[in-house]
Length: 147
Ligand SMILES: [Zn+2]
Ligand SMILES: [Zn+2]
Image 1 (tube, rainbow, N blue to C red):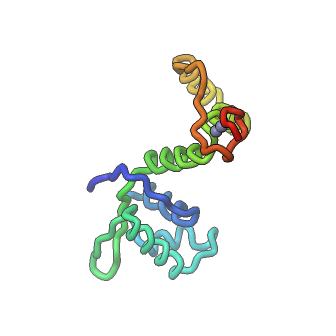
Image 2 (image 1 turned 180 degrees about the vertical axis):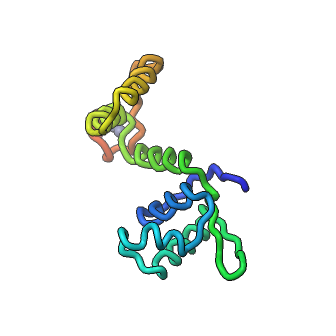
Image 3 (image 1 turned 60 degrees about the vertical axis):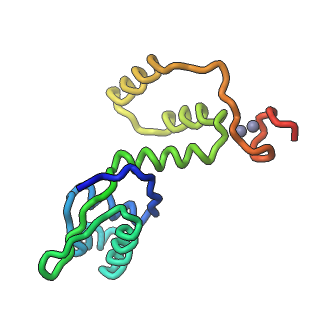
């Protein structure tokens, strides 16, 4: 089994399915149905559709075992989370990333251990004199563009 590093974009619903597959490492549509069916109000057909999309996106692979199909993750959870975060940051001005991270920290529920980890990361963070805006003129108001 190889875990691919390719950034794969998955929808919110597909993400719910992936979390079960990541947790179980191998699972069936039936098991996913038992875990998510009631809370998400999904019919077995919906789960099969979502699984089909994940297979097509190469996020999941499937093997037939007798009458059922077993599903396995093809992408790793940590890489998928990281690529989703990078994707979010690619939609904002580079100069706004510091602010956005500060807001995220402000709004998150964190333990003392979490805070200590963030502090340690900040303490060894190398800084730059200025962050360069990477936007197309007209996409941001940082005053570095002649509008
Ligand atoms: Zn910008
Ligand atoms: Zn700018």
